[in-house]
Image (tube, rainbow, N blue to C red; front, side, top):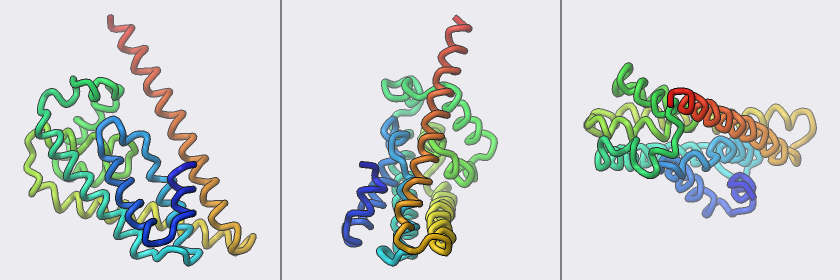
Length: 209
């Protein structure tokens, strides 16, 4: 059962905290890549259209989770410092992905959180990298809040709009099933992309030995 499937079976009072908790969990190093928040928010948007959940509440819970996740990721990165990338968990992340997160932080500075929030896996690493670079959180907070709200609106809105469009074709009862199928397809594509990236990075590492 995926988080989206679980969400569809829960009452609203349990669904809202689950959304926040899973979005926060995505920002935890090494665990984050395995938390399918895209599918979660697509399903949540579909449930909001179906009337099971309330759209503003879903967006607020997702945005709150993103902001809290950035805060704990920054704190972790600041604590680990240079050991962030070379530690036990950091070494499990493909080198090119770390390079992308650090490059975005160096090139864009604090606004990097705005861009990285929309890139899977990189959004987990970017606030860690900012913390390791000793960028004060208070200077990151406005960008974290803006990125979290924009991301929550976008992904939940896509689920809501997809459900609305599909319901005009086949009726309201198929909304949740369809959004879940779309989410599963997107997650499969992301999983394949992650595997390919890891294999390429291993090949490059072997070639450099």
